[in-house]
Structures are given as C-alpha cells and as structure tokens.
Amino acid sequence: MLIVADHPTGTVRRMRMHVADHPLIAHKLTALRDERTESPTFRRLVDELVTLLAYEATREVRVEPSEIRTPVGPTTGVRLAAPKPLVVPILRAGLGMLDGMTRLLPTAEVGFLGMIRDEETLQASTYATRLPDDLSGRQVFALDPMLATGGTLVAAINFLADRGATDITAICLLAAPEGVARLEAETAELELDINVVTAALDERLNELGYIVPGLGDAGDRLYGVV
Ligand code: URA
Image (cartoon, rainbow, N blue to C red; front, side):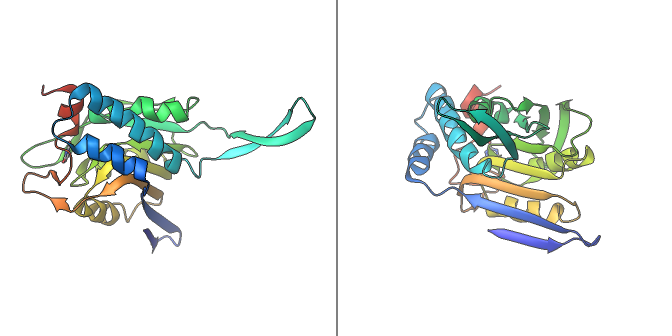
C-alpha cells in the first residue's frame, strides 16, 4: 500500500506499508500467535521473523560503489553508504527484535528509545533515550513489535523527526488497521518518508487496545509479566 501526500511546503511525503507475504513468515507467525508457545520459543521465533522482515525492510538501504579485486580480476561492487543506518528498538518489547535485525545489518549503529503505554488512556510517553542528537541523513529502522493504536509509533516517529530523521522504516510483527490509519493521519504534517514493514495486517483492535487476533502482550510473552 502506498500513500503519497502533498505536503504544505510543496514537498511530497510518502507512507508505504508492506505486508510480507511469504509462507515461511506465515508459518512462524502462526507458531508465535499460538498461546501455547512459551517464552524461549517465542523469543527465537521473533528473532527469526525479524531477520526475514529485515530483508524486506532494507530493500532500499543506501549503498555506494566499492572497487575490489576477486582472485580473478577487478570488479565494482557495493558497500553500505555512510552515515551508517541506525536501528532503534522501542523498549521494552522492541528489544526482543534487536538481534534479528543486527544479524542482517551488523554494521548499523543502535540507539534506544524507551516508551511506555498507559493502559487506561493508551497514551505513550518517553521514559528513556539514548540516540544521536542529529539524525539528519540517517536511515532509521525503528523496531516495534505491535502497531496497535499507533500511539507508541507516532510518538517515536515524532521524537526521531525532531532530531532530523527524514527516512524512517518501522518493522512491526503485527499491525492493526486502526494503528496504520492513525500513523498516516498523525504524521501527515511531517516532512519524511515512512515505511512500515509487517508480517500481517490483522483484523482490528479490541476494547483494551489489543490486536485481534494478535498474539497477546508482546513484552509479556517475550520477557514474562513484570
Ligand atoms: N501491545 C501488545 O503487546 N499487544 C497488542 O496486541 C497491542 C499492543
């Protein structure tokens, strides 16, 4: 799904949504959703799924030409361009996605953004940050397992945009239509490209803000209830 909007400043901003359609992803996601899947297996499945999603999410990662010699002769290949991509897991549950992402992008830098959702108001607030001050020119990959109400991701994108990010890809295990719509509506004023890569677009949210059918509370299933 591609949403292209004319920004008031005359620039064009894009929001793209990619639902990864692959039988292996669907297979792993089914096991992940299953309430009988316990934390150790859940963590391993998240790790594997993120690596598969990261392959899609990095399709436009910036590269530059690189001259090398093979044992047979010279050739021009590519290497990741500077500045390095930045991977930002949104704590707590996004941490469970970090290893799967850096497996594919080992030279990326990693920043941290701690956000918590008030379970009554469903509002997200920031409780921890460890990020470069200037994100201009960086390709940013935000890791957030559940795009549910969209509140956390909208707050995270605003935070990253305030530091100059203009190219943000969110990798989410699951997304709900309500969250996608809110993300589109509430980032419309920002001059940036947003890509969302997810394993599935589920049916809806329930009255508690959980994705249906979803997989439950991603943080609790990864790390237990604290
Ligand atoms: N956060 C989760 O962990 N699960 C949901 O279904 C919604 C938000």
